[in-house]
Image (cartoon, rainbow, N blue to C red; front, side, top):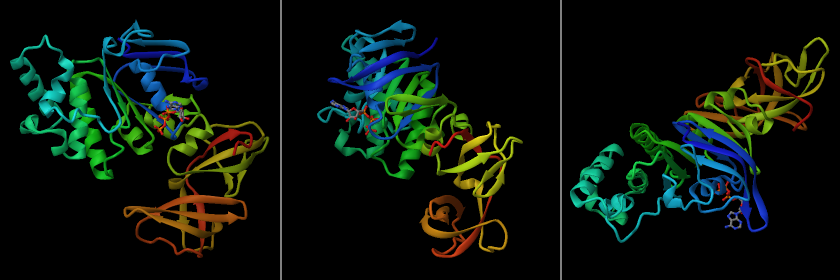
Length: 344
Ligand SMILES: Nc1ncnc2c1ncn2[C@@H]1O[C@H](COP(=O)(O)OP(=O)(O)OP(=O)(O)O)[C@@H](O)[C@H]1O
């Protein structure tokens, strides 16, 4: 059964339209809605949850049309930003909150214990209050609370954004394991591309209230259908190129191969940082001057000026980073994604 089907969805705030006709199908697993701040991700989530009424379109949850249905009748779990646990209830009380009064005390306790285990949290946490938990634990409790009534679909709004990088990854993996074991599909809103690519089965890339591309993490990264997707995912530079009638493509790196042929004329080339090989020995390849270095520990990215208006970003190992101001030689590895026209 399809967990969620959104078609032709339009919605906004007051007179301002934010969602511009969205279509999305979530069969099962985790779907990440990825996009820059303000593109409409939370608005979409709140429409699905029932907090915003769409101006047009259809939302089906487990096959049932839910537009006009109260949030609590939609069969969903909702994890808001920052978890938003009830501060006056202990963890057990928070998790059991959604179970309703018809569930007896022993059954509530069993379910709380089961959910703490599912979220890989110690059982003793049940008696603590939210302020006695770490940020990561609070987020997992918020997910446990959402899963308690056994929803078929869980909506997560930037659930890990307040956590530091290491904890974010660990919490993300634990939550995805819990969702899978519980058999719940999930819509995960995030502006963090690493989180979307590493956690989700399907990634929906959004810009200005529209989906630019919906596909597997590998598809949206390796075969972006739109330059906006390419530029948003990973460190990519969009460069000008020219396709000849014989299929050859000229670029600032000389002749390059494309992943798919393009008609003769201007093309926009997507150069991923990891596709640019940097050599300190500037005798062969395209020469450029290192202008910026961003060091990440395991690796670094460098911004290289090829000419006054052409810059490219390259990824290099954390050891052997060229100094700012030095001349390096660059070569492109593998075929490039290209789009007809100058779309930069
Ligand atoms: N309650 C509101 N009233 C008026 N405008 C709003 C309201 N909520 C959001 N907006 C506007 O709607 C647009 C989309 O907001 P939304 O919160 O859906 O974006 P988002 O992609 O989730 O952003 P972020 O990643 O920053 O949370 C933004 O321009 C925002 O300013």
